[in-house]
Image (cartoon, rainbow, N blue to C red):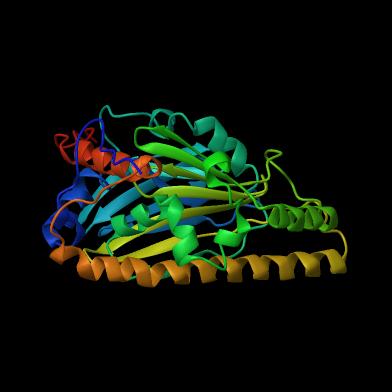
Length: 329
């Protein structure tokens, strides 16, 4: 495999993966100024409030008759938030002069995400799984399309088509990207049978596993053009993070007790499967974290791993920006 390096920028300094100084800088220049995914408000009016803790910042979003509003708390410091939506997906950033709009930040995936978010119905309770690893290790892990055969040989690997050279495609647009892998024939058949029983709502006719990453810490996974799972990686400490995600199983056939029971058992199966995959990722990320201080140099990346390098380039560009000019009250 030919080694390729970023067209621009370079590698994020290693100390950003284990020092408090690195996290402090990221707190202000990444999480204190970027658009961040907050969650989903469903059509029933629930929940009334969304909260998030990232890198020591506490975000609170409220919905009322006047619309969406929120604040960011950093100790005694309280700053207003700009809040916007992409379909059902709620994003917020610390209010500031200038900077990209939400649509510009999501480019070129705003329309695609909005279409996928239509399926954010029939929600399961949110899940948070802690990792003893820096948040960026989790981001790098999820961008590595090739770890399925080694880390997930009995879960992810058999579920996707073995011919990855033909059926794995990746779009890269700077900090954002979309990876799409055709499902294995057996997996696609399983979803087709499920569709026959539950009549899945679909945002697209596609028998694929899709994974859209939005800088800095959000990705939306989908299966079979139907099930969607928003994920967010929340920094907790230089060597700790929480992966938060929520399963939506959008079906149109929930009229009888039998159909509702089948929906419930299917959701439990999918939740258990997803948790199992994440629990396979966790020891790998934690082992990488433990070895970070001992590394001797940068890794070698192949053509299929350039999303990781794009992430490093985007982080460097974001950290180099001058302090935010906050609007006057």
